[in-house]
Image (tube, rainbow, N blue to C red; front, side):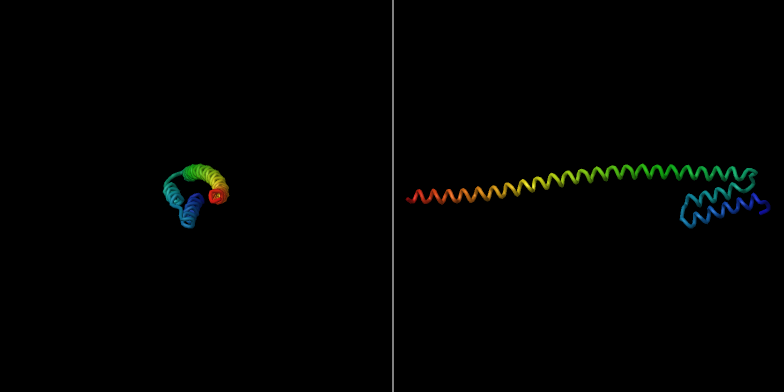
Length: 126
């Protein structure tokens, strides 16, 4: 490494490569390789490296936007599902209350029928 620019280029490549290893990112490893390849034999090395970094940032931003969009869709569908579930549970509770009410009424009517049959039997016996 003979110039300050070459040293800076080498350091930039090393930093990106180390970061790629630390976070286990294939995209950053690829960027480090492209930065290293771009540094060999070009006068405007930093412009190319800046371009590579800008491309990587744009790609990562696009991926983040896609992930955010997918998450928003999932959150919206999950909220809809919870609302439908709550509505169905309320309907179920209402129907169970009606069943209980009708069961109680049925028991009362059966008691009345039994009492009336008993009274009829007494009348028929007399």
